[in-house]
Image 1 (tube, helix red, strand yellow):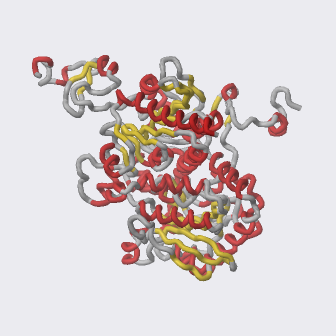
Image 2 (cartoon, one colour):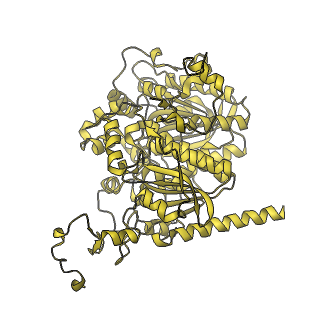
Image 3 (tube, chains in turn green, orange):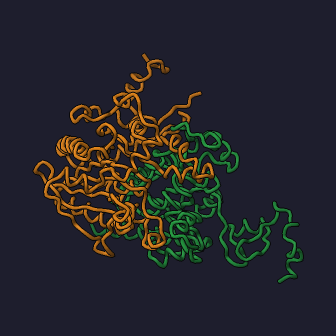
Length: 283
Length: 326
């Protein structure tokens, strides 16, 4: 093993823009190769966080994605200032992530099936849900409703965005109300939970998919592990709030490796679509 | 330059009619000019002597019969609920219950519900819908319990499902925030046609201590966080999170439980009277619109919202200087 990796003893000498060390197995991974493997470690299967654009590329058929509400940006409803004013934080996040806010929405095809696709990006202020994320997701659900297209949301979020106060909290009710309409109209909604999906996002639309899928090893929980361990005053067991923990306790349908995600989503969409067509024939 | 704020319409604007009839406060200017600071309000909202859900239920309603258990796991003492009569009519009432002493607080888990508490609430919501009982919920919690057992039993799923059920519950729903409205744990009881709050109640996305710990990296900055988060009554009116405030006795609700309950009772009767005349389909679409409207954002007018299309004349009336206007 060492032979393949002659600099393994001194990993810090690697130019950081070319190589990434896997936090799980310690293997040094060549960035280009990692990218080609959808940011999954070739050695141990560790799933790195995936940006929204790479995620769209992973799930949507080539050139099928057309973005909606791309220009929507946040305003500052509370005039919120902590160590920095909120608009400055937004500007910094935009520069860092290259996105206007923490979600990208649009129309796409998954294995030929037209869907409304929304993908969150953790890079933008921890994927937090404020007015823009709430509005874009709600519009996506409403478009899925009016066009009778399935909705696929890939979540990656620390929760509601504190800097927007109760307005951010109300986005939970707003998004849930919108996906509830899909539920009532029997339009499929597939929720994919990726690392991490916590707080207000998990406590709203992300838990309500007809099918809830999770990526392996993702942190998924209601409250942050730090809060929980402070509450009980002891360290939490290994694997607590990970995808497999939720699978075991019955809160996700499947844990699906990233490389199989697209075909799995397509399978469920097809099953629901075909069933719908049968129904139409029988009527 | 053509940027336009789309989502900043105030939700309370259409609610002028809920004002005077029950002595409610719908505009912050109606409050006393010397208001407590947000941090003082946080302390008042948490005061252990403040009337909690059962104190209010027993004073506002007659013949309250508590219903227990979620039919799946256990009975969560942090959520109480049951059937009672309000001015002679049966209603369903569900609330988060804090304790009035340390022992009771331990038994009630300081008003922090477990998932089974929310599932009990959902059972009672469904019961209300089945038998056409209007629903009154009383919000008073620091937040949903964040412990490991709660995670194992799906705290997030329970809250999400509870919010979902409330968004489409086919009976009138009136929410009263009694004390602390702590984040998603409060919102699970907080989706209604009308949301009222006591004058010194708070409603926030995270506790001021939690916000300070994350953003200032020090829980001692909670006072500053409380100011920044705009969680007190007048701010809730401003953002439309609450439709109206219920006046408290001078000195706060803890000084006079009876007077507080009387004010709540008057407000509830007036609101339920009004809502019971609205057809269920309208009730549901108005409730959808109420929560749909939250959010402030900016988008270039070229990429304006596809829905809903605004009639041209309303746009001209609002802004006669617009190109092609009067």
